[in-house]
Structure formats: C-alpha cells, structure tokens
Image (cartoon, rainbow, N blue to C red; front, side):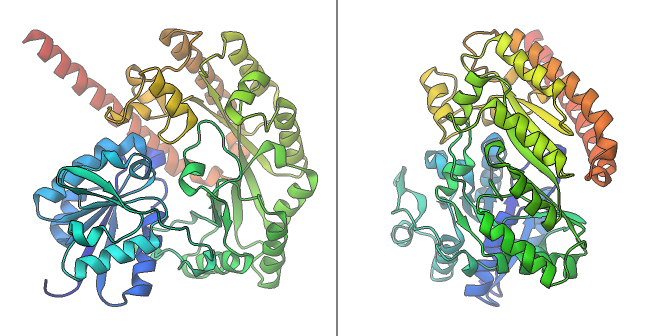
Length: 469
C-alpha cells in the first residue's frame, strides 16, 4: 500500500427518506476523531450516505466502514457485497449488527459491537500491521468475525468510563447546517419495552458540563450554528449537570447565541427542571408520551409513567414558555380499539404543539423483539425493511403485533391518527420555534413522496409482469 490508508465510512440510510438524511452521522465522526488522535497522519477518511459507488470509485478506499440501523440493514448488506467484490476490507457497525452479530455478511472482515472508538483503532492498527485475519482479529475485544464459515465473538469490550477522554466528532468531514445536533451523554436509566438504544449503550454515562459547553462554543464559533438539538436518550437525567451547563453558558457569553431542543421523559418534568431548561435556552422539548391509556402505558414503559405525568409535563413546559412535542404509539399486543381512542382523545384535548404517531415495531435486542419472535412475526434472517416505523411508505410490509385488531383495522386507525396529526401540526407549526426548518424539510418530504410513488409503480409493474408470466 502506497500513501495513506484510505477509509470510507458509509452511512447505510435511505437517501430518499427526508428524516434519514436530515442530519449527518456523528457516530462515524467520533470514530474518525479517535483514530486521528491515536494514528495522526496515517489514515485519510471520508464519510458518505449517498452516491456510494461514485464516491468509492473516486476515493478508492482500502477499508469500508458500514453502519446501519435495523430497517436499513438490507441496504448495508448490499454495500458490503459491493465493496467485498472489489477487494475492499469491510467493517460493519451500528446498533443492528451489535444486537444480532449473526447477521454479519459473508464478505465482511469484522463487525464492531457496541461502543467502538477503541475497537476501531485496534482494527486499523491490525490492518496496517498486516491485515484483518482471524488470528489477528481473535485478540481484539468487542468484535465479531468469520472463521471457517462460523461467526466468532471476542470478549466484550469494557465501556469508556471517562467520557471526556472521547475526542469531539470530526465535523470537518460533515455538512453542518445552522440547525445541527450533538450528544452530551450515552445511555438511559430507563428500559422501555420497545427501545433498542438503551440496550445498545447499556449504562448511562455523561460528558461533563465543561466538555458540553466547549462543544457548543465550537459549533457557534466554527460553524455558525443557531440551533442545537441534544440527541441524548435523556438529556435531563442529571439536574446538577444541567445547572452547571447553564452557569458555564452564561460565563462564556453563549446565552442567546443559540437555541436548543432536547428529549425528555414526562415523569421527570417538574417546574424546577423547566426553569433550568429555559435558562439554558431550550425552546422545544420532545417527549415519548406513547399513550393516553393507563394499561397500554404501563405495558410500554414498565409502570414508570402514567397519564397524569403526561398531562402535567405538557402543562409545565407550556407554562415555562417551552414548546411541548410528543410521539405516540398504537398497536400494542393487547391494546383494544377503545384504548387506542383514549390516546386519540388525549391528543385532541392536549395543548401539545406538535405530535407524531407510530405503530409499535419490534426492534432487535428489546423485550418486544423476543415477544414478536416467539409469535413467528420476525426472525434473524428477514426482510429488514419491514421494521420501518413510517408505515405509510409501505403499509403492506407492516408487522402487526396486535392480538385484538386485524391488520386492516390497525392501518385504518393509524390513518385516522395521521389525519389528526396533519391537521393539528399544520395549525401549530407556524408558531413553532423550529419553523425555520420547514421549507427544507417540506421540499425533501415532497421528493420523498414522489420517489415513493415512483418506486411503488415499479413494484406494481414487476408484480404484473410476474403474474402475466
């Protein structure tokens, strides 16, 4: 190999879907920063999520790092096959392969399981030292690899305890817009029955307030960012740290220069917390309220939240001048039509600014996945695109978990919620703090609809041809 080692990171998204291409991948950028710190001047990196073949032909990578969530794993496998056929060493990563390492494609050299900054550095060193062969890979913790047709798992890698030792993500390789995002922690203290993210990170760990404010300062100074969304599973989990962040933002003169959004849990929203969020500059909070029915909520959230918590959280946030947004889920196994309609009525009566609705979907690594697997609804070798939570795109692929309602009834109910979503959000969105994002999002969603329509027509034409034959 002459010159630097070239590593191409591929974010296996569906580029036609607006929400998937809204923000660039920070996960890959963290790995790059870690490698740059450990191996300065030895490796050249590039990140892409679209036009992958064209980028690959131009960049000519030695290694392709492919990351994917479960619903896009079909795409990830196609990319892995493409690179393997061209003699490029393939490394897989992300929540899906970490949960089901048995999905490792035949042509892939290895998969990074879980938190991977240190793992990735060792894999790069192994490649530079002679190659990614079973004898070498067996000594690297936290990976899966193939040997003699079998998938081998090495010892789990301990998680990084000093979060501030993690280098900030390599945003110089990303397209950073005026509204961007960042992480200030990894993990969540709760275990909702449907959430794979909390299982991926396992334990909750925080970047310090100083680290967080340093990163905010960098985004404002170097990228002209005006709004930052904290993508933590639970940004507000440590109140003391929030207060420290507020103080540091004030000391460094960053107050008012950028606005923030974050996610929260209804049961932790109190007037004191809302006051701190307002002081930081948080203008919008998203909550997974999930249901307006007590029994369904208990099933989804394990009894840690009730409908009164949901109502109070909305009132508290609105009272503090913070926009309150929420997501809801219908289609739990034992949820009846009447219980679903309690959620519908809750939304209509609430003072929510924006809301979204989803069908309950089983993701690998969750109790819900084990339940669905036990009923034969999913498997470790399935069409992964069936796990797309945006049911409206391909409703015929939808996995229905309900034992009380049929597929047509569930889809009809889902459409009813979608109509309410469109009506309420249309009215509310023009006064929402994130309204500046609307023109770009709307244009991308129109393109998504057109692309989906064209794809649907192609599928129908293929079916007709097959039936004719």
